[in-house]
Length: 211
Image (cartoon, rainbow, N blue to C red; front, side, top):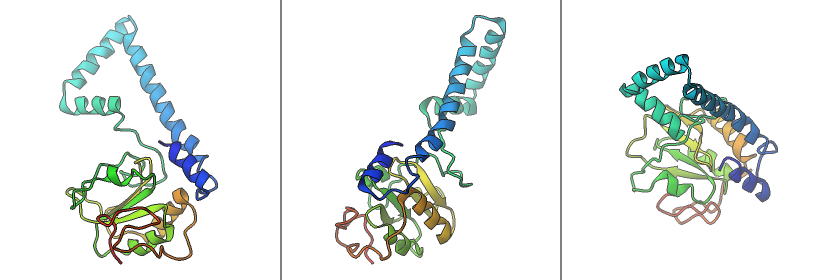
């Protein structure tokens, strides 16, 4: 998905000029981590005394709760994180499948191949900002069963977190991230974004907050 959504945005003509280049920037560091992980496994398989000693230590680590969690997450790819230049611990990671108050899950909102901005703060000014990226970012204002201490989170079409905020969002920072991944904003907000299903972004009425 990392490449797929970027190709789609480029074909549609609404991608930033360097969006395809970000595929290499995202993937190369992750590829290096995968190679290091493979080299570590090869080292454990060698029929040497040092490898057997290392294997014994690994077994002891896996026997602990933290150790088992660490290795399980590495095997499943949960620890994968792209370096997106943000200090927020969730940025660059696969987004949790948030379940909104209405029962809709984040994964369902990503099916149309657009970005999603989840706004958990009813007093947030993010709605007007998101409207400037009409058709590229779907804005969803709702509480979640477990918001993980977040006030808002922007998710790329591939399910990775592009931006997140724990407190009142910094609009300039959010706008920069939106421009980076979804191109320059429109001059005016989406005129179709109402309490009905938005004919531009395609989000159903149950997930689009009326203005």
